[in-house]
Image (spheres, rainbow, N blue to C red):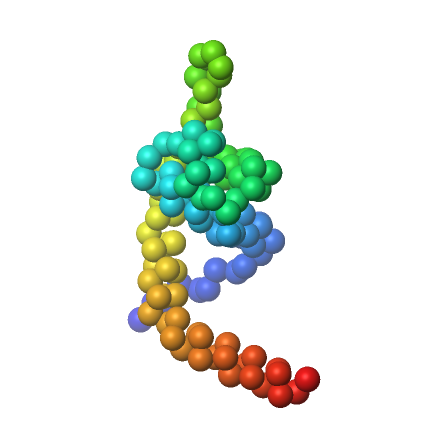
Length: 123
């Protein structure tokens, strides 16, 4: 039985994963998978995100080719963000991670509670 060797987690992989799987990126990608959005639509859809964090998140996703920014020459200028074909390929792996998290959340919560209780007992 042939198995592929494990993929090494080098600096480039770590940087990419940090940028596309962070707190706000997942929320932005979730919204943009449904439909293109303007900046303020994203702010309303993700109310906890600050303007600064949303701007930085969109720039990181755009830099990585996952989101594209489309400028429409109107007055005022309209900017719409949409997921790219490359970005759409993230849907399945992210869904796998979310399914894993959902399936194992009770065990994770028990482990957290046990750890926290042990930490509190040691304080």
